Amino acid sequence: MNFKLLTQKLAKGAFDYGKRHNIEFTPEFAAIKLNEEVGEFNQALLIHQRQCRESKYIDSKISRKKLGYELADIIGMAIANAKIHGIDIEKAIDEKWIHREIAKSWEIEVSPKS
Ligand SMILES: [Mg+2]
Image (cartoon, rainbow, N blue to C red; front, side, top):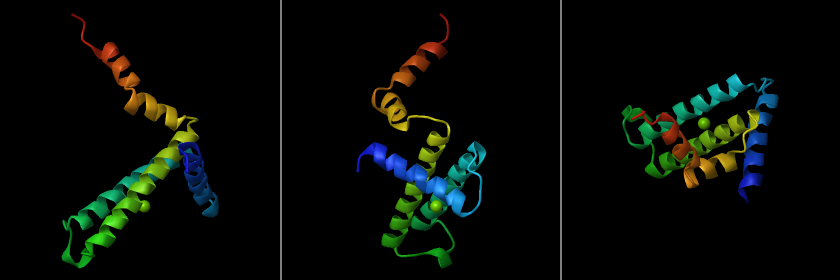
């Protein structure tokens, strides 16, 4: 599956969640849901690393799978956030992570004057 199709499917899944539960998918809701997913990832990580109550311990293969699912949720909600703001996330990733264009331009802007 190519990146564009993947992002379309993820965004649709997120917006369908809103419709299914009769929740308006506003920018604020999208941001809070992204934070919720980060929290769920943190919880899954604590369980995976057994930094939690013993009663929460589960098999490490299952806890790793849950960790992956929570990362998937984060990515899905990040893409939904991009979509709701009309951001081309593929382009943003390419500029920020691959070509470091933004970082370079920020370095120029924030450099102290000599
Ligand atoms: Mg989740």
